[in-house]
Amino acid sequence: MTNLQNIETVRFDTPIYVTRPVLPPLERVTEKLKEIWDLQWLTNNGPQLLSLEGRLLETLKVPALSLFNNGTTALMAAFKALQLEGEVITTPFTFPATTHVAAMAGLTPVFADIDPLTLNLDPARIEAAITSRTRAILGVHVFGTPCDVFAIQEIARKYELKVIYDAAHAFGVEIDGTSIGSFGDFSMFSFHATKLFHTVEGGALVYPDRNYRQKVELFRNFGIKNEEEVVGQGINGKLNELQAALGLLVLDYLEEERRKRWAIRDIYYAGLGDVPGLTLQQDLPGARPSLQYFTIRIDENLYGLSRDDLYLELKRHNVYTRKYFYPLCSSYPDYKNLPSADLSNLPIANRVVQEVLCLPFFGGLELEQAAIICDLIRSKSRPRRYLPPTLANPN
Ligand SMILES: Cc1ncc(COP(=O)(O)O)c(C=O)c1O
Image (tube, rainbow, N blue to C red; front, side, top):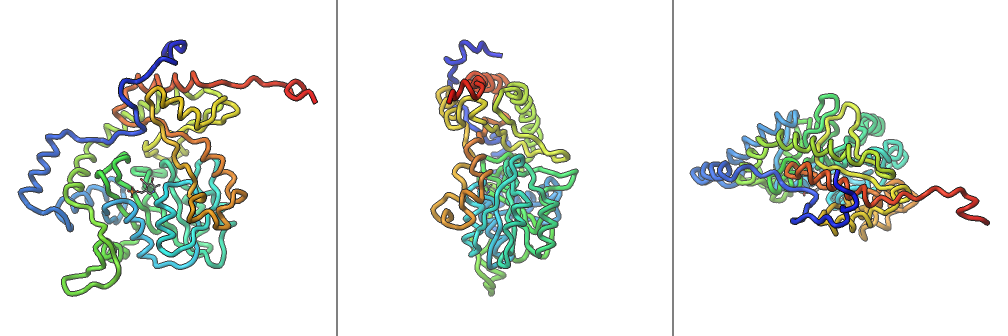
């Protein structure tokens, strides 16, 4: 442990950001580029894309998937394939893409509150939000923690709803050995550079029912069926060969990255586990974690400093944490007037969004740096002394 008396003067020489991408050795990238150059095939279902698709089917343990140029277009493809009209129940505690895609598909987002432990949609609140216009549930496995997929499955069965999961953070997550992509009608994975597995920009749509493949892939390619026929609306959602090739290489380094992240997590648990007012991200029993993020929640009353103040304090030491997912989607101009966006409907999400902080979490973070970050956070704690009510307020 660092000498806490000197900790105030610590400032990292270079900024420590919340994440850093896995980058394979440049020589291996150059070799791959040579393959692509020799073949002169840059996009449109080339060999790199097909090969990545095959590797990902195995890695994610799913029966079918289609690759996309980002997670957002993949999610759009799910809505396009389902052709729904009406309401979709979703979480306000997520990245903007989740809500925007549902709304742009013509559905009305209906926000339901989250569970205070998993930070995901609370099944009881989903059921309470169902109306005659409800058509789907759009869950997010936020920070890689699985939604209560079994309860959601049961609600969907009972009310005949479709289920779409935004699994942007959930690469490699399994529940008792079953891939997270096996649940619901569709799951979207993001391969953005900030993600554990990435293709710079990219994404995948997973669908346990293979019959969706044609619809999904038509949407990905402007609705073009063949040289003579354009059979529906679509966009350009294709992942190119250079990105697919990089993805193939990144896959080779994932286990090493995961091992390094485990070690950093251990440092965070050991260094922060007993700090009053901090709650550390926990794994659910039976769930294989994604190791995508490491989040803490700060109870200002017990810790003595708000999340926002800790965020600013850490910046002074050159540590750049992130306040994901602030602000709530329900507070954006497009959604804030929806009845379900009212504060009274979302008390837990409104509290949690003020409390969560994502700490630097990537394999290249040195264990010593992680330990110093713990010391910094510990040193900022100002537990308030408990005053009996009579002394605190003599009246
Ligand atoms: C929860 C969530 N959904 C959707 C997305 C969008 O994914 P992409 O950037 O690949 O389009 C992100 C962003 O990274 C995300 O965090």
